[in-house]
Length: 321
Ligand code: GDP
Image (cartoon, rainbow, N blue to C red; front, side):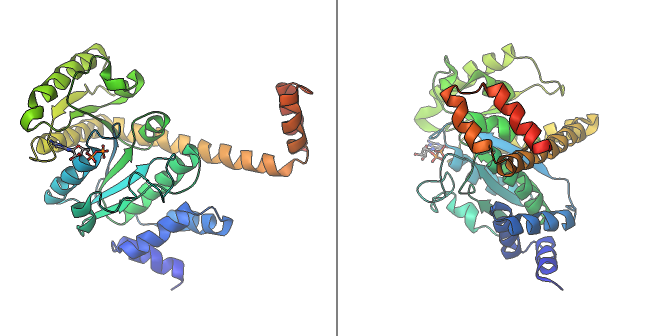
């Protein structure tokens, strides 16, 4: 057995060291690592169970890590295995990755049926999203059937994550949602489920206010093309209130999307855009390194020595030659 075969066998047995090895290859920028990762991904076994991919977003402080920990443990109690991945290109692994802090999700991290992976350290959003996509395939092959992909809820990463998951969940904090708490309307529109956090103790009235405000915001939005009408639920990570309702909503969504064929269609669309992402990023890298004039033209465009479109044409015709 080669090392790679051993790694693939290990992953199919749910061995987290083998899984960690593959994810390290996936996250590496070395060409031989990328090739090894791609090879291994192609050989991974298909997951034995249906998998559920959920994007979870919310601004810092909304209670995201507390929710993911409590919710993850709840889902594990229902007989599932949970992986938590993060997409946060802005924060390097050291110095404050959203999952880098070891004290976060301590209980979940210790659970044998959970796997938590912080955001890859380097790279653009596109790069991080691509690696996360591959990591989803890897954790699913290791029998983690519920995959939570976390983002920070402030901008572009939400759109990238929506393209990786089946369902998008937005967390909102107690308080008035008049201005939707500064969350971009486009992000609210993407949500299949809005979850109000911290609905306990003194915060209950404020949580009710957020619930009402977001419910009317959701009512004003059209249901997505899939036919699913977005829901809003109240939860508390401290009292575990509402966690079961969140899981029920997710399973209901999955069942409905599965029955109508919308889930297969969504994943098929995502696979196609994955392919084009690969083509685009590989091609771009090759064009940038193949053409000798790229650097000169890059300097000439801002100087106004050549128009951007003319420079583009030169680079492309040089590459085609
Ligand atoms: P994140 O930055 O979104 O990951 O938020 P955290 O999970 O770290 O929580 C931010 C703050 O909200 C912390 O002080 C938590 O103790 C508090 N918090 C989180 N969940 C709850 C909850 O369910 N109830 C209450 N009362 N406080 C919470």
